[in-house]
Amino acid sequence: MDLIGDLAAIRVPVPQPGDVTPEELYPDALVEAEQARADCAFALEAQHDDQREDPLLIALGNARAAREAADREIRHLLAYGREFHGDRPYKLEPLAQASGMTPSGIRTAYTSSEIQTVARQIGRAPDGRRSRPPAAPEPA
Image 1 (tube, rainbow, N blue to C red):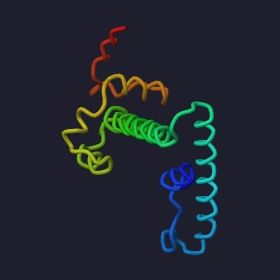
Image 2 (spheres, rainbow, N blue to C red):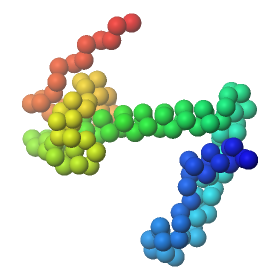
Image 3 (cartoon, rainbow, N blue to C red):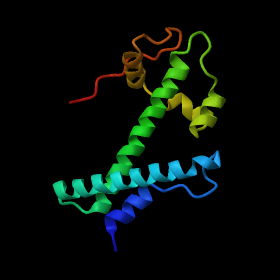
Image 4 (cartoon, rainbow, N blue to C red):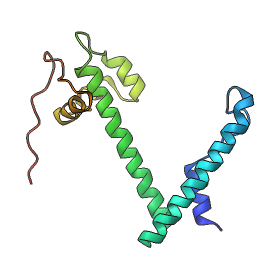
């Protein structure tokens, strides 16, 4: 059993014939995926050596961090679409469909803190007509 190899194979699946369009790009996609898998295994091995922690727990922690980063990105994108998109913010239904949320979930998916983060990232204030009040500071 090759635990790290198995974990890398789970985290970085290689494409199967028919998965890549156009088909003539399949060999290149396969080489790229195999390299990404090898890189993943190398990084996991290095983390295991540094932390002396179970590789499965490391991989789960990495996947959790990636999920949290993706959730944060979704909240920022929703805030942008609703708060920074000029006179006509994106409607709830298309945002809900694209994000996998419900329309009512879009309304509460992001906070004023996320609005402030987006404002810093894009270098401009939200459209004033809709912005929420600033978030209360978190207790120390």
